[in-house]
Image (cartoon, rainbow, N blue to C red; front, side, top):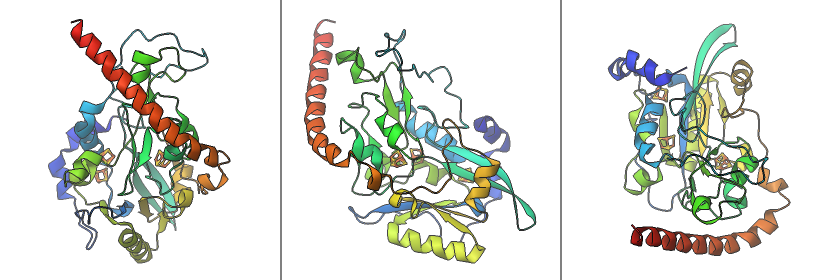
Length: 321
Ligand code: SF4
Ligand code: SF4
Ligand code: SF4
């Protein structure tokens, strides 16, 4: 389903008319620097209009990959080519060109049929395996609790996706550092995902998806306040919470009027469509955690070397016309 087409026919003004602000849950300005922030999604308010998806795409369009084709041979040959560059309009799943999508489901609950819409993107884990286990230090957690992938360093090996309980990061072949430096290295691309609009937040703004929502579905604030609000809201609607404890706790918390198991049953997970199953703390089972802790500084140095080498390559290209 093409939500952008749907949004155009609906019209943002129409969606805004349907808006019903939830007292005490309006989007908030972030707190002092260094405060760990979390976002809260009130699914009882989401009408599935897709304005957030559209806003995310517009806000991040200049960061989307522009791959060089034809792609070099993959090594080893089992490494798949993942090319979304001709499918940029796909917006019903995560892709390197779509970091947020709406999972919709019709759910029977307590004798009623309910249409539920759930915006899905990176959960911004408190103990993110993607950041802890990236061999190049390309993925990292910020002081405000978001998790980013530095696309200048990422070599597209997809370790982050493998260790993510929700398989969030998405790979695009034919872009990135490996093309300049290590064309035969396995990986062949760069991983992309939501970074909770790091640049906008750093400049004192709000994530584009929060700003665009006509129904104030999402709010952001200090994690302890967001958790308290989530519990208040869940109590008021006899609802359910997802994200507070999953994977050892995340900075993305959903409150739903229907069980998440029911949403998952009506709208099963698949490629680019993350699970809603309970998730235990991945890092507590990760045997290579100690190794990763050793690797991280080495990777940071390696990353710096790679960046310097890339600068040299760019300078040479510039000199030679
Ligand atoms: S949801 Fe996945 S990609 Fe996002 S921070 Fe957690 S482990 Fe990383
Ligand atoms: S926080 Fe920013 S990058 Fe993440 S889904 Fe929202 S608009 Fe997209
Ligand atoms: S979160 Fe807001 S903008 Fe996104 S689909 Fe729901 S109502 Fe629309």
